Amino acid sequence: MKTIQFFFCLFLAASYLFSCKPAEANPAPTDSTEADLTQAGLVQRGEYLVGIMGCNDCHSPKIMSDKGPAPDPEKLLSGHPANEPLPAITDQGMVGPNQWALFNGSLTATVGPWGTTYAANLTPDETGLGNWTLEQFGKALREGKSKGMDNGRPLLPPMPWQNYRKLNDEDLSAMFAYLQSVKPVKNVPPAPTPPLAQAN
Image 1 (cartoon, one colour):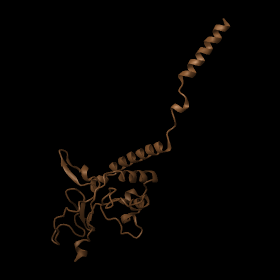
Image 2 (cartoon, helix red, strand yellow; image 1 turned 60 degrees about the vertical axis):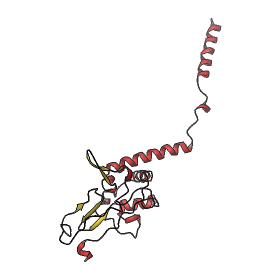
Image 3 (cartoon, helix red, strand yellow; image 1 turned 135 degrees about the vertical axis):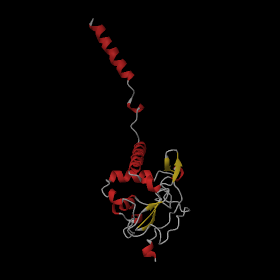
Image 4 (cartoon, helix red, strand yellow; image 1 turned 30 degrees about the horizontal axis):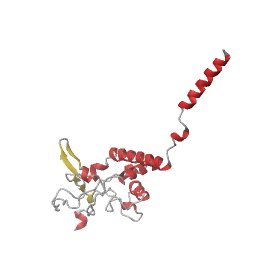
């Protein structure tokens, strides 16, 4: 009886050992696989943040959909189109110091007491963020510096950079990773112009 029990236990042990795959059959992910997964996760987080923070509201030209104006997927985050002029504004117009602020139809240009501003190109094209570093991106969002340069002019309204001053490093990196992953669009939005009162 003991012999039968011994062989039965031996049979169970052998079955268990042979049913398990050797460690080499399931190798641990390589560093590049882990990096790809991390980068993909970072981009996905950045897409979420860019979406909920309303970046497309001003930085994406619009097309009319059955639900109203929607970001143009071909020009996503490319800023105010360089070839889209604004209507002329005269000194008799409603826009000037201490008067209304107006957006164009795509919400990519704004006229107000500070002058006229145009949404920047945030795509990875060289006319957008293509040559930027993460440090520049952080300086623009957290400190309101144009092009993320210490000696750059302040970012003008309606860019709400003051709301982003406390972005943590992880979220800032995720947003930058996502913006570097979108379709590059060659577009140089016009430079801001001063208000009429200052232009005269």
